[in-house]
Length: 128
Figure (cartoon, rainbow, N blue to C red):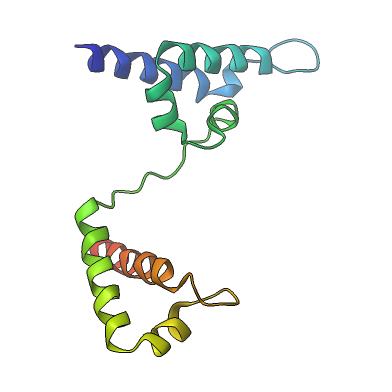
């Protein structure tokens, strides 16, 4: 029941904030105060839902601009599968693995780059 109420509150807030043109406003701020108040009200109503909707970073800025982050639908299982593939590839030839995926000076970011590449490839294949 609480989740349904939270969802309803967030949807109502999105409708309010998602249409900044509806706030004609007078003066120089062109309705920015109303948008700011609406975003703060959404955040006060349910901080977790607010952050989930507008992202963990710059949530208030995203709300005020009417931007929603692109939600990823990558499951933990997909990350695990990609990590397993990368681990096997790294174990087979560590030097080639570091050269292929490493992008910084010491190539220590190779494993993370490998996993993200594999997950992105899976996402592209599933959407095609």
